[in-house]
Image (cartoon, rainbow, N blue to C red):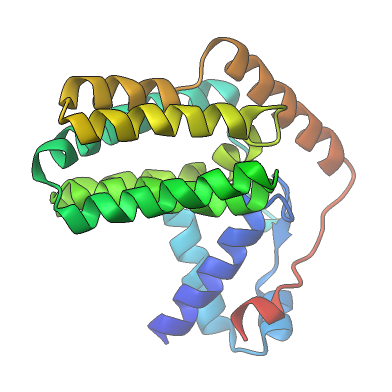
Amino acid sequence: MTRLSDRLREAVEEEIATGQLLPGSRLDEVELARRFNVSRTPIREALNLLLGEGLIEMRPRRGAVVARVSPERLIEMFEVMAELEAMCVQLATRRMSDDELAAIDSAHAACRGAVASRDADAYFYANERFHYAIYAASHNTFLAEEAAALQRKLRPYRRLQLRVRNRIQRSFEEHQAIVDALRKGDAEKAALSVRNHVIVQGERFADLVSSLSRLDAEAVGAEPEVGLASAVS
């Protein structure tokens, strides 16, 4: 049952991350159970997991809906994410094995290919691999788990940033600075590079707020239901 609820959680999480489920979209247990051809128990478990991640919220008379996060709250979350990732990369600089550096390089190469093909979706997934490889290389399980948990909460918004013109190219260049610092064993430079890569400020803040406003406009007057049965088959 746990495996099924995890797959259901991942399916809904992916729809939120890719923008197919907009903020405010209602997630009805009965409809989800019918579409996924499962009982309501694993659906309820999956929604509880998403609630714990902060990706959905419970509202009176509406039940579960995709969470709306204020720009102020979002900036706070990115600030914490930047510090968690800086800690990860500092530890990785000292502790990573050759195989772990190779995994980081492999994810970076996948990012390069996505940039060359101008494939924002491919870049999004390669970018996740890149960051998770750094978490693993820190050899601090608790820290890696905390970073991954916040990463999941921020997935929709990290993906949203990639829609901004030329962002994937700039993101790749920021990755290159991180990789260069890792190879040189420069923990301080690696941490600074990661902070600059993750934190949202200045023009990036304005771009993100603008994108959030467009999403809200798209969601006005619409409460899409979920049709994700194929995602867990």
